Length: 250
Image (cartoon, rainbow, N blue to C red; front, side, top):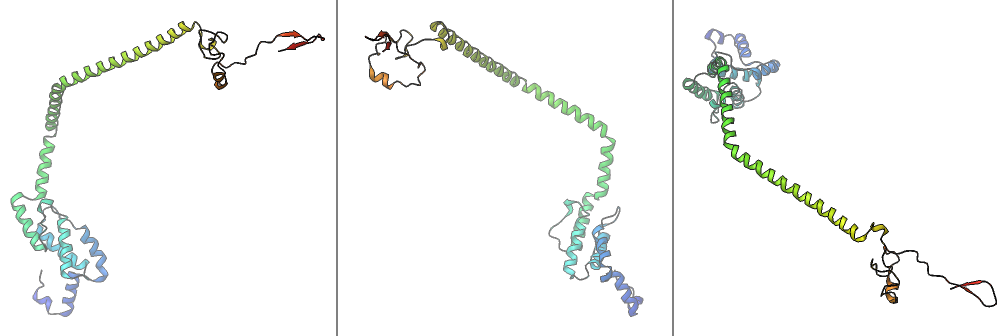
């Protein structure tokens, strides 16, 4: 935007107009906040938004060069347009505005597109919801029907496997009970009260009838902590010593 000829001649008016246009360091923070919050208004053209951003960035970043100001204005412009209209090859605001205007001429403005989509979805919301529910239910029913044979086969396999496991557990319990009863029957009584040979641990005979009773090496090597170890007391005989009436223990 250029100044009229009658404002260019007086120096004071020219300085005031330039300060209003480009700003000063004292008002830099105020213009910076305005620049960051600037978005596209409804019905506003992209060209007007680009020009306004270029003026604001010159006031907010007056210490930077023109190239840096152009990049900042371009980034702020991209925040107000859809993603499909962004062009990374653009280096100036003017190039970006030209491309965005071409997109909008072909596709329409983004604000009008959003409102039309919202109105259509709002009007047909209940019908679309019913259609979607019916379609989802139908798809689920078809899926369940198609998977029914597989589910039946899986259930049958699981049931047969459970029956096999139960039979194995039942057979194991029966075998253990049979062995326990058979051992008790052979022993004739509890294992704790069973009497065996002191030498060879055989329940068929006792110490006197054992064939190993004369084996001194076996008796010496037999551990005193054996299962059948008992406090064995040898037989004592009472004999009378000649000349005395006192008994003698052998």
